Length: 456
Image 1 (cartoon, one colour):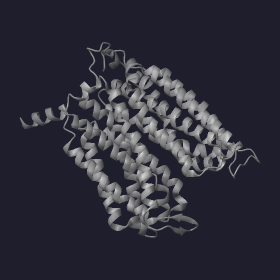
Image 2 (spheres, helix red, strand yellow):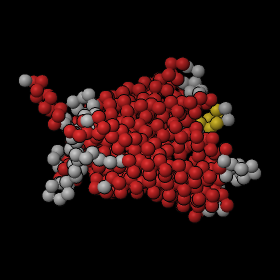
Image 3 (cartoon, helix red, strand yellow):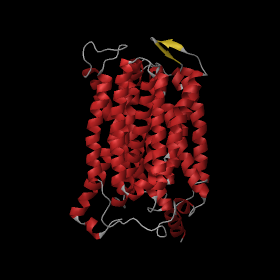
Image 4 (cartoon, rainbow, N blue to C red):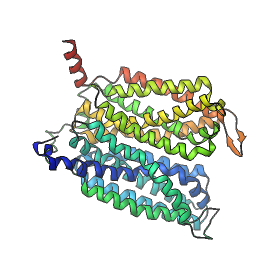
């Protein structure tokens, strides 16, 4: 809500100091959860477990991100300072404890305590920090940037997506630079646990500054009495309940499909003969992810109905996936310039659509249900992220492991047909999501009013 004061020069600058900058500080910190693939194998080797065993730490982190957002949405709604402080402490403490348990696991090989400690630290404690940290700045941004809500939320959520591209090369250097000579355990230096401890301190400072700066506009006052503020269920019932179910399901499907492809991205790139460029392509993918978060949400500000963005994302996802399916791009791409282009286009667009799906959810919900309980409703909707985190990459891994044929390609075991088969799974889900988008999610009041005005 903009008051007369916020339109003046001094208060207008506070949009950046009180909303945009703290949002970026929070999201650029917690977004580094997606750097897991950089050091997951090193953690597994250092503590003496398989990569599959340690992978659950990331799955738990995403699960508890969604669930903490769902259950703590009301806390965010009532007090963003409390929720952003919870996020700061939980994320930093979880990261530091992860470092400690990696260290402990290195000293006590195959220690179940070390593995469980990493699950609890990286998965649960950091997960709570992720969920509350993700939610805390969103409503504040929409209040400060009431005329460009999509641009504002896209800017912050883009920080979450860009965090991997920014932090990945730094982490790579820290892994080697911090390792003392002769400290190797199972071929991995002790820089792995030192990195977590140091970054815990760095991210605590960044997030704490964001916590101190974050502030809602002076003109906005949260309703205090229960009579003044309806319950979440009452708010959702202002529209047919199938409307919200449709939003939740299409959000869940978009994340599931995105994770299914992104989790196999590294091996798909190797399949098409670009093994030497995996790192560069991963960085470009992260840029598309961040760009999709900002671009799609800013674009939606110009539309009468933000749901149009989801229709575009699903239609284009179906088109790109279908092209790679028909041409067999993944299994036949090596040495074929056109097929390589199609596969890369699919990877980049899915990353962009995956990011765009995230940034448009809070603004779509606010268009349908208003700003009163948006943090709580957005939090419940993020439970879709929790379940997608447990199903997307696991389903893709199952398909790859149970179809196709494993071959040796320049010393690397890969399954081109298996990766190709993942596309049958994702295109079917994208079609379902498009149907939900067209049938269940109704036009907003703003879109209906514009349609009536045009008819006159």
